[in-house]
Image (cartoon, rainbow, N blue to C red; front, side, top):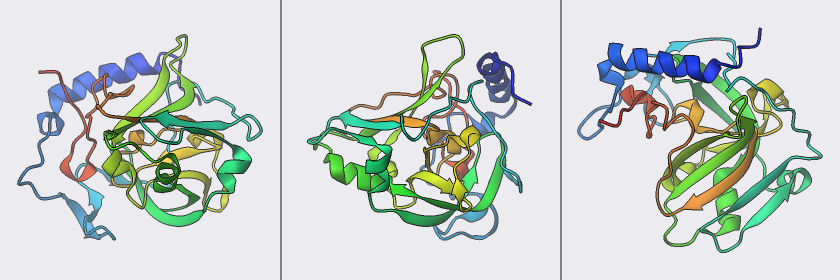
Length: 239
């Protein structure tokens, strides 16, 4: 069953309740702290299951209240900002880029994790190498085709350029050997396996390289700007 269009307002209320209830997950600092979790070490040396998470076998759907239908014929990816070579890719051009297969875990800030997802797509690093970020570029802002229902506010999310170009950050079009489902961001979404999953924009359409950090949709609505799962880094306030 689809969630009602007031999903964003209801989730903001949830975020505020959690900020009051779970102070350990608010405005988290990492200096001198050890990553927390359970299970054997993953390939990055972190516990397989981050602190505060539980494993699921299905793949729950979360969105802003709409799931845009974007055909491969009309999909485009605009890459710009502080780069030497801004460009726009069609689907065929995107698929002509070097493709990689990856297996990685998916950690949602709403406390569930899905292990060992099989992806196929293009490394963000490949996009960055084509764009040639200028020396002052330090951050990335990604925009999706989806909007907050009833508004012209698009989904955006931000991350440091250094985190975006890690090898396991991909723009994926295939999941478990099949085209990425529409409800999970198909035809193309970004994944950020070492950060909470909202940092990977679904239905991605735009990547901007920036000198200064610019908070995205959920980052200005109570979620953490840094989103580190192994530090329970879920929420932030302006205090």
